[in-house]
Length: 612
Image (cartoon, rainbow, N blue to C red; front, top):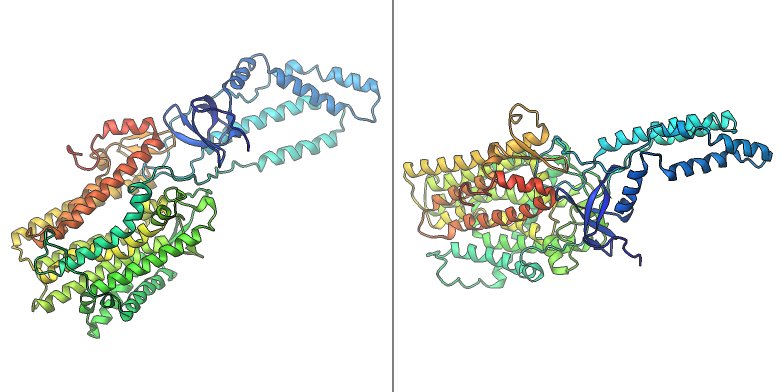
């Protein structure tokens, strides 16, 4: 087993990935399995380097001190090289002596030629066309590499031309050698850094025990809330109702309807409509392609629902078997999660998730071990993220609206039900219209696809996000027009903040010179990305989360204030966003170092202005 060369806390020179530049770094840890060092740069940036990309400080000091008078090692190397070229076995000894003496003549002239300087260079702050967000996996400084590479090639060629005048090889052979050498340099291109997915060390959700408990806690929460909504007094202070008989929780026909819905959305996803875009770089430097056609799938689904209503299909069937649908979706998500974990055991290391590779079966099963599981071009995680659950949420809301009219004997839906349906429809349509933006979220670039996302996408979103509409079917709440207007204004405010912040971020990411964002102030970082410190992102660090929470409150207010049950979504969503914000803080601090500390000083509030 190879021994490590550099100790923890040792200061050495580390090569910046993808370039020939070396900087002072401090060794923080070493992985015995991958043989990679974790090093920290002066600006706080942490990267993982191979031992071949690290040099001791003494070797750099030696080169620096000898560069002014000509490197001894360079001169001796040139001498032996020249001598080896002149000592042909077929040449007499006098020719060898003559060649040896002549090879020393151009020494002074050679030393006048500029050689590549290996003195550590200061890392400049780059100002590139990127924005702070979820961290990119590979960041390579190609411009610095190409500039120094050209300088080195030119100095080598100049040295070869001088040595050629004193060389006894044939001109034709020397010319052929030089052509091969230059051809080699021309086609030499910097290779992207390929990183190996490290073992997950920072565990979330209470670690291994917490993840194990969440596998049972999440389905239990869904069934508890749905059962409470069906009670005459849906107070959370009451004892939970008894579970129905097991045989009544499962119906093959309901499971068939669920599978029909799932595969119908899969068919819409596979249709060759919509543009194809590339995602963020993966650990191996590649970018996956995604077809952006979620909004078209929504239109096709709306057409299918309209045809069903035309033929008088009873949508109240969804309400009558709502708990059974939730059970079917839960069983399907568990089976899907088992399949995802099993296939991840054969996945290459660079395709694993950085957050679900702990080695513990329960934690990795919950978090998701494989980052982007695909069946050919069918991306399972990306499909489940927006299609069956999110579009299903709208269909369930519509079914609750129609059921309310039937149960309450109304000629038209109540104002409360109309507001809930309208607000949540706007949210879903916005997500599908801006589908491309999801490719830079934590769910896509960081979280693996396991039980957490599978259950969240297929069960939690459609069956708990529609909790307000489900609640209103048997617990109507009459709203005055004044109250309704205030709730609408609150939702508009939340959506304005949410959409304005996300749009500002996306425009800046695509083109920082766009007139809409060119005036914004930024803090450059050592990774080449910029941190916005003005506009929406100068108000709080996560203004999009603030808009989310305000909208969630507006969705719950139409249900009245008699019970806290409809406000579960607000409580859950606030806790979820605070958890995500804390995770973002840790990762950004590790990635951007001192630049992130400056950003936090400029923007002290995280989600709520002047509060948090």
